[in-house]
Length: 370
Figure 1: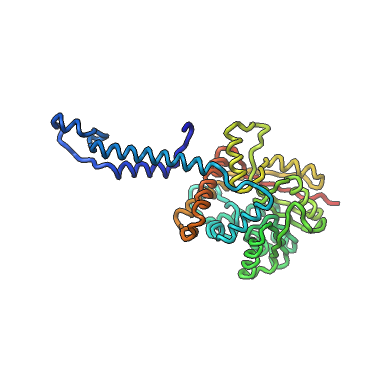
Figure 2: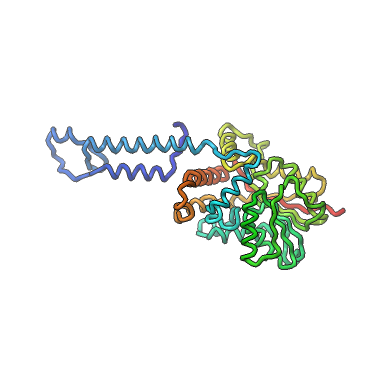
């Protein structure tokens, strides 16, 4: 298969298979012709019987062929976006417990400084660091915003919402929304356990929010734009409910701006996979988000940034968590295929961000005073 990149683990398995079927032995330099024709010379002067060598070659060939077959299966997305698909997927993840086991109560990437790039850092520590850095990026200060009414759009299990509620203090009010009833149930349980009464959770459609205009001092959106089928409406709804002078900050996976570097065939194929494997309708660039905010006419100057370098460690970090600690999935055989698919998608995400096809968009602005 042209351009097929065999994963490192498969290469290791192939090497192991060759070693398992090989029985090298040291022999004298002089052997009779009959013996020599019955033996195949291999690297380093060692030999193996022909039949064993053939079995080894067959095993390697089978492993490579099997890898190609499995790759073909995994490359075909299984969870395309559709009506109700986002709520359904997150409900299932909440029931399974696997997502919470490995990602914790914060379903978003972590933040790694330059010094931490090649050092181990617990994922939950990186996620807390991300929230702190996102607060700084959005100009959110507990000393100034201690009485703020906050809206968290797309809250997951509510870990970030509760952290914000604690960070801003007991006089703040955090309202967090998600499409998943199961996530609201779990988020509310955790709020009680963690004694965070100023964080409330509800099922709400971000594209048709029931809140009145000018309801919140801060609108926070972390990794929710990916699932929105109408980015324009998504932005306009958040701008609408933000109070004049209020602060807006958003983190979202973005595809690069293809107006400068058009997508080629490979780019389009890889994006389609990323859209369809985790129920994303489509991505847009951070520049396109900034333009939507500008067009709303409600906001002051928009600031954007790309945090790929600060967040990219998270993808492989979570894969290794699953390998090193299989307790989150090993007793749930019905989820095995789904776990494999998720691990494969995490790696595909890592590569897409690393090569510049994807960007980690950070966006902030304040609302114009009336």
